[in-house]
Length: 373
Image (cartoon, rainbow, N blue to C red):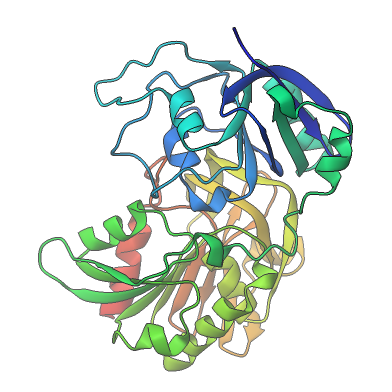
């Protein structure tokens, strides 16, 4: 027999369904993910820390859970929302059922609700705080409990998901470069891609200073994806500026793109409902080429007026001119920065493609070319 569950948004909208995963209560920011596949990588992406993820794909869990696809050592989402969970897991790599894995890691979820209606509500009203309650946790005053939970603006979360100890991912084949990678919420696929390009990757905690990054004598420095509000991450901004001052090549993705923007003196802001999924069209302004890309971000870089952004008009910064290199074709959000004098570039999306299309994996080669040059 199923256990009743209820999802309550901070504006009072309520959805009733069945418990999926652990039974109890959880809170976070309600966001939706438009990917049709890759639920295991999504669940284990540290960038989803303190977020309740609503899957727009109606059928989830059919391939179960394996031991090869996790992007970190645990599930990071604070809650999980699906419409129609698979009753049977069927895949040659499957080791466990998704519902059992959620329960084992104490992730509270809900199933059997109209996720299309919930997604449309979030598109109209914006991402907001939410709670999922099941079993004995369903009591009076649930909206008040949701309103008492923390929001995402002002949340400093990168240090909560980062590695505590430095470690090294060796190069595959001949070593060409040494890369220092700041772990702000790093996914396992990212250093793997760099290792394939001949990089020995030294992964350092989010609290690493510029001196710590430069101490490994890197040919380049990488700033990873991660959760939270970039306006709180002054420690990462200071480290970025120290690396730029040293003239070392820099590559940043997602949160790292926002950190580069702040280091250059640009602002950041919270998007209405963010970009999350594996089907976001991004245009490279220099060539006009469109990439289909994987996203997970609720904040973006503020690089000027819409017309200037589309034109790629350079902006003068303390580190020379910088221009917007990529934009999202759905809403003109800045999706990449390119420094014209400093050796630095960044993108707002995930070139490691875990999950997602492989259109942008060439950016790791571009980083290698920048280090070689």
